[in-house]
Length: 551
Image (cartoon, rainbow, N blue to C red):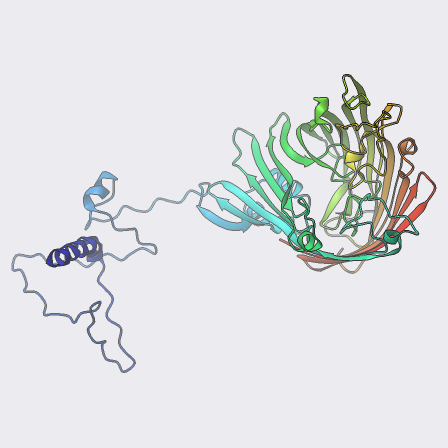
């Protein structure tokens, strides 16, 4: 036991020695007094002071310690400090070096706008960041963490949706889902859904510019991941999924993007109409896909031209051929209007015209349970897009702004470019053998059709959408009124099943208001109108109320 006591005392002495050495330069504070003004009673942590030690006749008077700076340096051992170039104790500290304004300052919480105002972001870097964030409401004020010279921007929004549909056709969005036919149970009964799956969270990372090359990366998520088998699991436990995940190299010669983001076909997302109903709507291309993209921007005094080409993920991996997309977009920089994409991105943007083309290859096995040969089909399409401010708007003048936005697309084998279109009711028949065999398609439903005779044909779609936005005067652009019409039609779905869709249309009227700079509420009513190849017409009336908090 005595040995343990000696060991404990030795460890305590070793532990206290560095503290005593570092405490020599600063005297301890005086003991606090109790409310009565008396010094506290001695305790093991605060023993009573003993008599002062006798003076040493040969000792030199101790000089008064120098005043500490605002942030005192940590005490260092004299020998170790000398090895690092530190001044020994008792000597005057060297004058502090003048701070370098361009050097990294550790960790700082700020925003893109503040960094731009402080000239820590150039105009080009600031505009590139806002573009990457998709013009999100309040994007300039998005929280940004500066770590050394790396800038990480956190952005997104909290969203809540309440929807009612007159049929049991849609979930929290309709997209291009088939509308249930009348005189059926699901076609005669409605449904109500409260959900929050469209809430969004994203990170943008910007590295320091080196040799004129700007490198950024972006990860963006929402909660539309794989669904569960129960309503409770679907609406109260939504699954996180990737929306965008890419890195981008912006160079003086060409810009390079690698990863998953919006498709270049239709120059998405620049021509999304303002809508309360969740995109993509009937007649509207809406697709994000992994890709390798090259682009170049050419600027003149009043016109900007964007050229781009991309190799996208093959829509059919068994084709072994990437999808090819190319496009050109012309912006008229002095002719601007106010535009809201979906309900989450409101910006002042110039009038523009765009055209893009898509080429995709399919390799489909013959109509057999054990195929030996196949069919090669080429698909794709062309898209025309436009944004036209009828009553122009600027950052300082938004009163009575009116604009039109639209898209026309003609394609074959392009069902994956439209939200929830899928097979659109087309079917693949059983193989006419005895007994009937099963044909295994190696492509996603809706891209192609196979007839009972073995004929293979890509499904064709022609689609268009037109949107109008009006911002009444007197409210600073915080109130918007919207109207949309979308339509799509197929010329060959009638060859692949009597239950297939022939055409569909969308009609929507809505309004939104910004209660604060960071909050928005919106409501709309819509009609989804389906016509099947057998002539049956099905309608779904939809109402939606939504709210957002942007950060």
